Image (tube, rainbow, N blue to C red):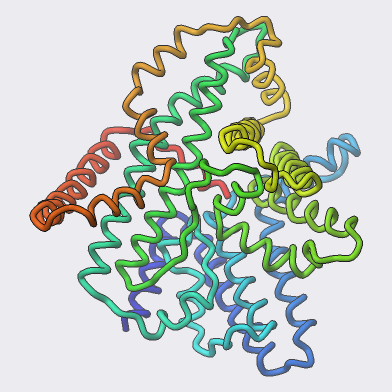
Length: 448
């Protein structure tokens, strides 16, 4: 009954935003449950069935997400061809639930998880609403036991509620605030330097704002999903591990969007041979395939493809030159990493190569755009508290705080036990007030 109620609630949640596409979600659940069951019963046809499942899932994903992009590029190459223009609305979260469903079927084929005969349990795994829209991508093995036997407690409920509020605050108070700065500056860039001069300091500030926005946007949603999962008795794995303290781009991608990186590693990179190949050319090929797919996964746009290629080049050079083993001072390695990540986010945020070119030119003063900006100073002063809090929350302060709390006397611990939930309740009230009053609520990963 608990699972039935949770499944119905999840489908209702999805239908609230996508009434028509809820049938697509149900179809994905039925298809992947049926093929996984067939694979477990007829092992001799397992590979064929797996190929059919991948073709069906990726085919649907291609139609909804990439068909319009493909047709547009074909028309550009062939001229005014007979192909009609395709404009299909992207179903919410299709990339996430497609990858999650694929991971279940592949794991059944590999015999690393037991097939689930109950279709409603598979549907609950794929459609569970906390992580349905924007991840994290949950592997079936991590929740299989909790779908059937999970423990509810006041402690888990309170921990989950607090985690949810923290994520909500990240999204509404921090990500949305940094979005105001980033969107203003990027929109000015689109006009071109001939019409609007964006000084160097303003361009750099806009890139930093987006770097913080994208982190708090998605890590905030991940926190909300993990918190909601705990409230229902599920334990989802962490999706972010302070990525902005990394000292190499390779380390950054071990800390950023961990569930997506793990998915590509487990289901694309390793099956291709990974890095344990005799011919290093194959390792380069494997890395290239993964990052081309990673770029495309984020969106049907050439800027995303080249963003994937940019990360591929960074990772390849770090491997070839054994960058992580260099004995350079950690500060310099961290500075290099943040510069590469920041440049990558500029390309990621740019809607076209023209905007990317303009933005880079502004950052390095190549457009006759000057250096100092009073508007940049205004943004720094206006949102000073947000900049400070945002930067501090990128650091692993939670572990340090726990150690400090453990060393406090009993009376102080008791006081904190009272103050903390009151503070979380107050923060939740602030978030709801902010949500009601503000009509500006961009959600980056909503598009993926």
